[in-house]
Length: 292
Length: 274
Image (tube, rainbow over all chains, first blue to last red; front, top):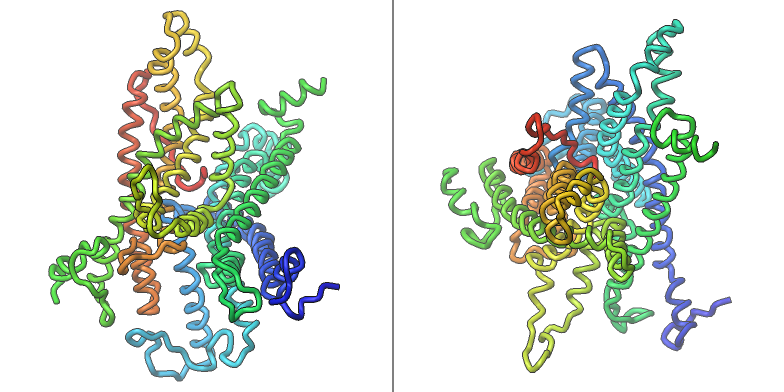
């Protein structure tokens, strides 16, 4: 067992091991988990948002279609970071405003008064008395929803294009077999579109990975936060004094991200090969020839 | 205070010209539009210079990636991998931390003292990062285009006896550029969007001279109302994006002017490619 009771007396490897296992460092390691959780939660939610957006953009009903098109057009032309900064506050205020309307219908003071945004105390989300952990989790959930909205719009773009790319003939064949429109959609269009969506979705996944450090800007204690915190110069007042090591911490983060993107690229290439099997496309044809 | 007065006071605030203190209370819409617009100067500065310089490095990298000798190919591949595989946000932090480690007093070289402190300032340090970053992304685009130059074009060049530099200059390079242009337009748009990250990523805004998003964030923090400043930034960037699409569209028409049926209209999907 490691004895780290008196850090000032330690040297060499022993010091390094003790340094790397301090409570704050364990928090740092856990924050990598935060990033992975964000990815694991955001990706499916954004895909669902994107699916809904793409379906809405194809809808025969005009208002729904306009809603869908508007959603997909939203992310073009404007830096995504603007949306990130905007949605986190806007969602927070929006939720509090709604709760306020429900719980304090008799409240007469204006909510937006000069430089303040003030709802009644019962409408605070999370409640002012809640423990710190609840505030942190709420902040993280807001960040996840923000990511999902923005990346959902990206995904809607990709999926809309993929749905348009499925050959007409395949859909007409399904209709000739007497399938109804929802059946064609469910049994032919959706299974076939993934092939065309994969390059775009793969790209999106890489962008999503590379967008995760922005969590730091949304006020979540993520890896960037801890790298700055731990790397900063520590004076003799600390247990483990050291000069400014932020450069090395950020190098570590860089390696982490390079490994993530590289690994993802390999996986996407495999998935692409799997989806192309038996398809009437150039890649599918090449596989058929190779097998024969 | 009239709006014209505000424009005179804050129109060039991001460059340090005009009123020294930012507005602190009673924010008017005019102030927000003016100051955020003033910050846009920095976005344009970063975007234009990084793009212009990155274009040349990207061409060199694309050719190096296609080189037969691994001495050229491997470094180019690693460069592109590192800058495309990691978040720009982390690159900014890393560059800033590395640049502030340079000795304060400058470096002695051949009896001369080379000043280094300016490198850790945003106008230089962030510009270098953006330049390298866009060069890596553009190199990948150019490399892909280089590989898809039609075989017939090269055979025609051979038939005319074009070799070496002349073949590259007159056949290979124009065709590569033509094929790469729509994707390169995307990259340009994305680069301008990426410039908003500069002042959020370690590089301090000296005397509160920041970019458009820096000022928007300032207003949102002060007024606690995100519904005014952020849409203003969004509006500015939409205008900027249209301007870019127009400029690059003109270049695209020129690149394609020899093709029958004139230039195909570019299908742009900003932000989706990268």
